[in-house]
Every structure is written in C-alpha cells, then in structure tokens.
Length: 334
Image 1 (cartoon, helix red, strand yellow):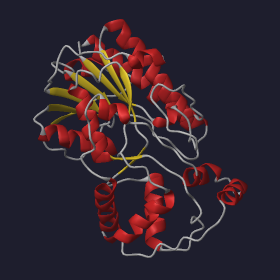
Image 2: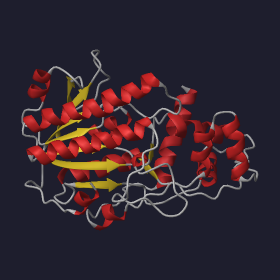
Image 3: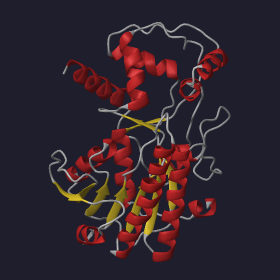
C-alpha cells in the first residue's frame, strides 16, 4: 500500500463547486460545511438520523443512511464533484463487543457503501477522514510518516485501516480519485472526550503529578483540519495519497495544561513524578491507556502537506486553544 502514496496524481479538475459531506453535523463536519459555504461551494450535508438536525445555514440537508436506500444517495449525488466522508463510529476509551461491531459496521461497511455510491454516480474525488492511530499509539523515537508501515493496535484503528484499504480498491477499480487524511487528536470549540477532560483538569487547578513529563504530542485544531480538507478537495496533487496534518507545533502535556490554565486565569499546579510510576499506578486501576496518552509522545511528520500542497495552518495552537477555552467556559456558565 505504501507505494501508492508516492504517486502524485494530477487531477482532471482544479476547481470544484459541489460537495457531499457525510457526518456533516458532527464536530469536524459542522466546521467544514461552514467553511465550504463561505467559499461558495454547493454543499449537501448528509446525516444518519431520521430527525431533522440543527440548522446549518447555506447547505442542503439530506438523510443518508450508511448502508441502505441507494435511491436517496443517487438523488443527493447528482452533480456532486467531491464526497468528504467524515461519518464514523468514533474511538472509545473503553469498549466491548458492541462497540467493536459498530466499528466494523459503520467505519468499514459504511465506508464501502458510501464509496460505491459515489463511484457509481461519477464523483471525481473521494476524501476519507481516517486517523493517525492507524500508524500506532505513539513513538518516542521519531515522528510517524504517512508511508510508514501501519500498526493499528485496537479495533477502532483496525477499522480505519480497513476503510482505507476499501477506498483504495474501489477507487482503483472505478477511476475515482481518493484522498486519505490521518489527523492526530482534534480539538476546538465544542470538543469532548479526552481533550475536554484535560480542560477540566486545567480549570480545577488541582495539584497534578505531571511535572516530570517531557513528551511531545501532535495536535490539529478543528479549523485547521477543515481548511486542510478543503485544500485536498481541489488541489491536483492531493489525489492518490495519504496525508498527515497537524498544527505545525508539537506540545507536551504539561505545556498544554499550563497554556489552558493561563487562559482560564487558573494556577497550573504540576509537581514532579516519574512517568513510569504514573503508568504503573494507572495500570493497576485500569487506566493504562489514558496514562500513556498523557505521558508518551505521539508526533506526526506533516511536512509533505507543506512542501507538496503548500498548505500552512491558518491558526496557531494558541489561537485555537483560546477559542476552545472560551467555548468551554461559556458552556460551563450556560
């Protein structure tokens, strides 16, 4: 698979004006749809729920299940140039058989179904939002590159890799262009899960045994990710490749907490404790994976995005973090 990533596929089109976005009402989808509308795209916003989603100005909302009703898809895909497939069963810290089955059904089967509908409708380009977890869980030696051997370590990451393989096969068979994007942890206004918990730690100002951690973590703000996806939708050299995307600055866990606490006007009380001790104690209470994310490095090499696509993150970490903290505090007060 890695060999395909070295091919610079020149697209038959340079500018498109119509897109269908799955998962359009999710964390990344809302930000991407708003950006595309601002740039005068015609956007069909796909959603899986029967109920009408919240209003998203400027888009055409469409109920599009990920495994059935091809007639609905055929209608919505008319005159669509690019499909951006964001809909997915997201990663869960604790999961069981039901979650693993959902990964297979939604991330694998859903990706196959959507790609087949898109190819059948003559869509030019298909963009899959994958995950950097496909490459592994972290490395203290060097940064991950898109062409590195994959090493998914849980059901979620394996489902994302399987989806990538399926998209490559369908596109290779039908001539539809593919773009695969592997982001690290995505944060921004409205973020939930791990990043939301980290903001809670910063807000409380509790003493935390994180002062000895000297890791590096790649992140990407949701605004930067949306901008990068929009770039991949039209850039002639984006097709046929896997891309890593980051904010361009890697930060340590202690530094991230300090920055968030400063924005909240709260003290950051971090005292030293060997990371090995932290991991050992976390393993004893079944929180080893969470401790690893706090202590270990996870760095991506996103240089090709800069060198080949000439893409630069429109926002710095500090700018997106300020927006994220402001939204977090507003929601807490509200």
